Image (cartoon, rainbow, N blue to C red; front, side, top):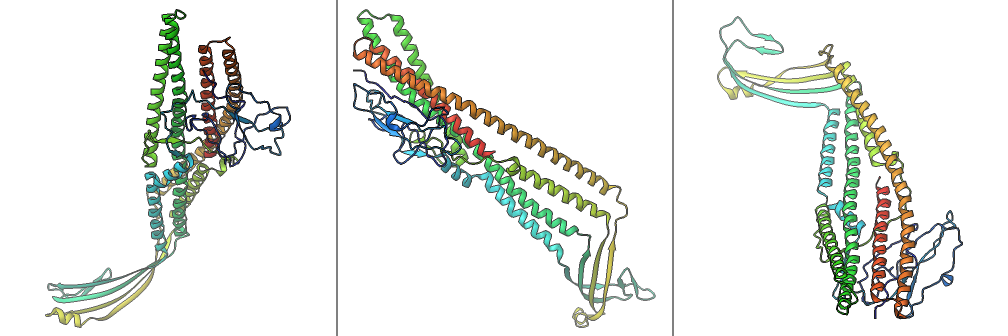
Length: 512
């Protein structure tokens, strides 16, 4: 006897409950359950906009199966928001159907969750590791800039033999002393240099160094977004391929059963060779679709493995459907991209101000304390002879009056760079708002498609139920019953794909 498969009275149209875990698994997890179910500890909430009032579960009609046992009913917890009084919870009805279940199939024991996978990926990312090293380098550079606040103190010791030629006498020029006789001599010089005033140039260098660190931190957030988007894209491809393999394997088995039944009808003279050829072609196409989905699944897992540095075996790993928390959408000013551009503009302003400081002089102080000793014959006697010679202190004023317009050209260049950053900020804001509007429009379209798919699944389930009853009464062939099952499975696959697309858009909106 051909038995009926899953009947869905309604399905999930949109996710509206915060922190609700929605898990869709394969129908072959258990030999007595259908492919889509909600775990006992999980509350799945779906909302459908309607003008009808919220009905009680007891008042909702159920399709009674005359062939099998009474279907088990999983009711989702009623969830009605204050600002959405016209939403109601839905029901998922599971029918026990052992005919559609492959007893040789084993559901992979390992379930991979997207958010946990993303957390591990961000921890093991080589790109983020290099960014963190860049932050440490910038911190070291900031410490180097802060050292300009302290004076430079140096000690120099000279020990030499000086051979003098016949001259009138000793001489001193340019701060250096030139004796007229040959001798061993040595000196000890303690030098102090300190920049007293530079019109705040050092403070600007320090501020720029601190901004560099903040820019790198914002770049880490941007890189995390890029990694999350890339992981999400590959995870979505793998998840769709996984669902396609599950459903089309079931369709393949039904097609195979149709082919066997048609061959028997052909032997009895009730079918043609053309019917057999058509079914063979359809079955081969399904087999090709399964192979293509398997290749896409393996390729996506390879890319996920490269991103996360986690080894994933396609034969032992299954992906769990997305779990999305509904959070308020950010404005552009709150995004990591906006913060990064603002920091770059702030840095450019500080650098421009620093360049303008080159027009002003710098005031420094310099001091030295010197000891000197000499001897005509022995070096050690010259060392013993060392004693205080002189000390000096003075102010140094440095002012670059003309540098070939170098400072002026540097300022012009920096202003152009600042204008470019302002334009980048404007363009990034427009792109952000455009993506935000696109996601909003796409989400609305997906909601509409989900409602249509939900109604289609319900109609296909009703048609399958009617076909099964007619077959039981002898008014419909078994082939037509199997064909109705195929139509219902195709509708179910389409619904799953649209559900995954909708959840992906929800996550992308959060990653803006």
